Amino acid sequence: MSQPLIPTDSALPARGHLATEGVVLDVVIPVYNEQHDLDPCVRRLHAYLHATFPYRFRITIADNASTDSTPVIAYGLAHELPDVAVYRLEEKGRGRALRTVWSASEAPVLAYMDVDLSTDLKALLPLVAPLISGHSDLAIGSRLAGSSRVVRGPKREFISRAYNLLLRGGLQTRFSDAQCGFKAIRRDVAERLLPLVEDTGWFFDTELLVLAERAGLRIHEVPVDWVDDPDSRVDIVRTAVDDLKGVWRVGRALGSGTLPLDRLRRPFGDDPRDLGVPGVPRGLARQLLGFCTVGALSTLAYLGLYSLLRPGIGAQTANVLALLLTALANTAANRRFTFGVRGRRRAARQQAQGLVVFAIGLALTSGSLAALDAAGGAASHRTELAVLIAANLAATLLRFLLLRGWVFASSGGSGADGASPNGASPNSTVPADPFAGDAAPTDSDLRTSR
Image (cartoon, rainbow, N blue to C red; front, side):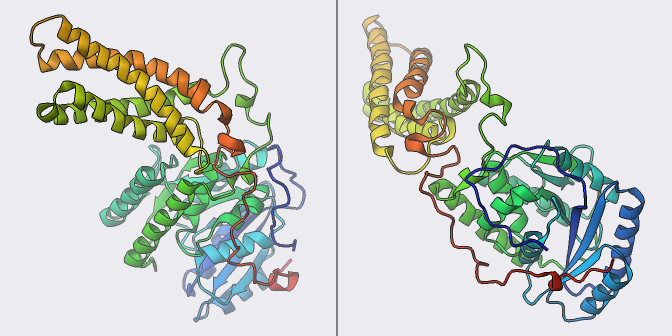
C-alpha cells in the first residue's frame, strides 16, 4: 500500500483523465457488528463488479471494532474472493474508517457504500465515470433528485429533507443529499481534503462535501434508486445532535476564514472562467448576482426600518438611521458574499470606506425627500416610499461601482490582502491533524486474497 495521504503542494494539479492501469476503484464498506448482512452483500457487490465494471477494482471491508462474528466473516471473504481486502480498526466511527482506508489506498478513485446496499448498484459506474474522465472531483448519490426512485418511511424522509434544508440555510450548500451512503472521490483530491476534515463519525460525509464545495471543487450528483433498510443501526437522536454540533463548528470555521481551503484550488487556467471574455471584467456576472441579492435584502430591511421609525422621529431622521444600519450590514454582506473577502484584516477600513459610499446614498435619498417637501403639499407615505425607491436605485448603481472599483478593488476577486477566495491567507496553516499520532497502515494491515 502507499503511504498516508499528505498534502505536498499548495494547489491541486489540473484535472485530467485518470490512468486506468492496475486497480482503478477501491470501494470501502464500513461495518460494525454486521455478521448477518456482510457475507451476502459483499458477494453480491463482488459479483456485480466482476460482471459489469470495466476496470480493476478492490472491495475493502473496514471493520469498526466489531464485537460479533463480523471480523471472522470478513477475513473469510478476503481469503475466498479475489480483490477483497479487510482492514480492522480498534475504534468505532464511520468517518474514521473511511479516512484511514482511503488514506492507505493507492487507487485513483476511492468510493464507499453502506453494507446494506440500499442503493441500486447500477448507479456505481455513473458515479465514478466523471471522476475517471476528469470532469469532476467528487461524486455523490442523491435520493432527493427529481428522477430518483426511493422507498422509505415518512419519518426518515422527513429527517433527511429537514437535514439537507438545514445545511442549505446554515452553510449555504448547493448539493442535494449529504447523507446518502454512496460517494466517491478522486485520490488527488482526497490527499488534500481529508486532513481538513475533523469529524470521525456520521458527520464526516457532510463536512467533506461542504469543504469541497466551498473550495470550488466540482461535485457530481447521480440520481439513485434507493430502498430503506428497516434494520438500520443508526441512533437518530444522537446522530442529529452530533450533526448540529458539526454544522455549528464548520460554520464558525468557514465564517472566520481559518480553514486553508486554498490548497484545494485548481491551477489558473484549469477553470474556463479564468480565460475571461474581452470587454467583460472577470467575475462581474457573479459579483452582480451577489450584489443584487444583498441589495434586495438590504432595501427591504431599509424600507421596513424607515416605516417603523418614521412615525416617532420624522422622515429625515428615520431615513438617516435606517440607511446607516442597513449600510453597515450591506457592506459586511457584500464584503463576504459578493467580493469574497474574508478574515478581519482591513475590515474596519473597508467599513469606513463603505460609510463614505453610504454618505453619497444618504445625500441622494435625503435630497429626494427635501425636493419632495419643497414641491409643496403633504406627500403621502406611499409617495415618500416611491421617491425613496427611485433614489435608492440610483444610489445602488453608484454603490456597486464604488465598492468594486474602490472599497474592494485590492481584492481582485481573490479576497483582500492576498487572501484566497476561500478565506485562507497565504500564511494559513493546516489545523492539527487529529489522526497524526496513528501509525501508517502497512501492506499487512490489508489482507487481500488474489
